[in-house]
Amino acid sequence: MTDFSAEQKRYLEGMAAGMAVMKSVAGAGPGPAAQPAPSGPDALHLVAQDKVLAGGQKLADQEKWKRAEHPLDAYARLKIDADAGKAPNPQDNFRWRYHGLFWVAPAQTSYMARLRIPNGILNHWQFAGVADLAEKFGGGYVHVTTRANLQIREIAPESAAPFLEGLSDLGLTARGAGADNIRNVTGSPTAGIDPQELIDARPLARAWHFHILNDRSLIGLPRKFNVSFDGGGRIPALEETNDIGFQAVEVLDGAAVPAGIWMRLALGGISGHRDLARDTGVVVKPADCTAVADAIVRVFIAEADRTNRAKSRLKYVLDRLGFEAFLAEVEAVLGRRLDRVEATQVAPRPPIDRMGHLGVHPQRQAGRVHVGVVVPVGRLSVDQVRGLATIARDLGDGDVRLTVWQNLIMSGVATERAGEVERRLADLGLSAQPTSIRAGLVACTGMTGCKFANAHTKEHALTIADRVEARLALDVPVNIHLTGCPNSCAQHYIGDIGLIGVKVLVGDDGDTVEGYDIVVGGGFAENAAIGRVLWTGVRADAAADHVEALLRAYLAGRGGPAETFQQFTLRTGIDHLKGVAPREVRTLEAAE
Image (tube, rainbow, N blue to C red; front, side, top):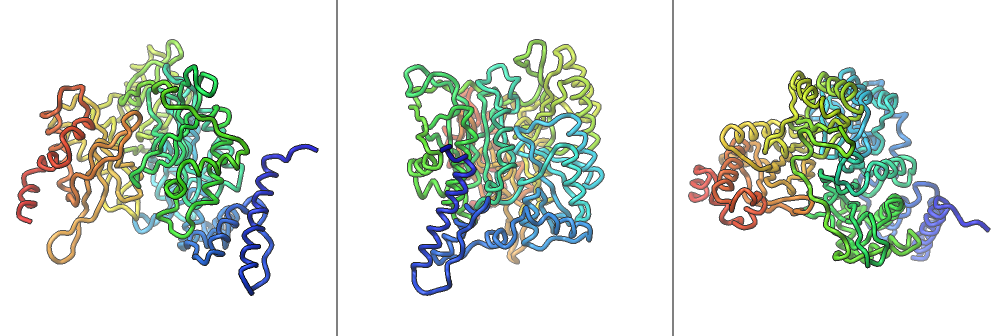
């Protein structure tokens, strides 16, 4: 007798779990006859929902909407609504996000579309094709996101389906790019070309990407889910901010597993909730990453909270169960033990370069360089996109590599032609020359295009950069992240300086203006840390003053150029830093 396939085993597990739930409900006393156990690819989700209902709890509205009509079964209605130019109701606004469409009214009475680009790498002709779609169906511009992805905005209702079908014509997709799904799969942006990388992350990211797209049971999770693959190159992938972070490591001789390159497993990152992924002690063979990630997601499906959306991410499952109990459930799904090694048996990660995503850098391929392009707060016009695609085609290897820093890289440029690339970038109004501020300047969409935002983050970010660059000679990179709301799309908690949009009361009549809470001391990679709150309720028109004051204090008080801004904030402390606020703020605080 042959063994069951993996898919058959999952089907049987879903059936068995469903039968157990229904049996427990039927045995609780008189009531309606037990219903057939859920089956098929949605069984795991239905069983988890049934367990909530059997326990006398109420499902969150989004769970009810998924249960009433699976979003992937609703595409025909999406097309009908699109043909009629109809705006979606709340339920369908949620469902259409499974197809990558976000209705963003009242900020804009249109859709925003988010794509899926594994490892953030696409071909020049796909990049140019996205520009054509953005011009034909959108607002004529493209945003590079903090998941090494692209967003297109101002898509009218009647253009929704034609836009999605145009993506398919390009060999791209937006399926599962929003709502309760596994979001765009990120990886090292210089994978395959980085001289120091331990492993090329591209095959790992692509394998997981296609695994998700071709397994419906991985669609419609309790909440969104992020996975990232870091290959150990010079540019970090920020995998510690993901629910699952796979980190390439070199296991040394004497460990419980053979020496060589493995992927270390980190779990539970969600920077907006002030937590970073933690090392589990587990190492995974690169070829097994998809199977392990699959098992982790299935345990998440079974265990996550479906009643409270604020507590339904993987972090909260780990907080409740503990890491070892959670990993035991993962091992039960896998059917084998996971490999573990001590931290002392793993070599340190190769060093990162905080400016490595911008400028000209040598590749592992002889005679070739990659060129990182500064994209101010991630926004490009369609003409700039087409121009970049042409440069990648004519002077590079044809790839365009997006990064989590909202910029992009063109790879495979002949060393002697790097200057020509820079000249052609200048013709587009762009540059490859980084500054200490703009190299780490990150901003979400903000109030211009997001109904959740409390501030115009992209506009304020540029104001801050202009102000600081005009007044200070900053000789080291400092990351400044602006996010408009607690969803933390710009990951403000890992910036050296992070700003989160808030409404600030002014006067006695309840009026508010745009403003920010400001945190300091965040970090990533080997300096991963969550920033600490320094000031709250800073008016937006004073944000640049506060950032300038912080950076002046750093330049005046650091223990030499080798001391980073993060190290400076840790050494000096929050209480001391509060005193560097602009004079008018200190006077106001004293009066209060």
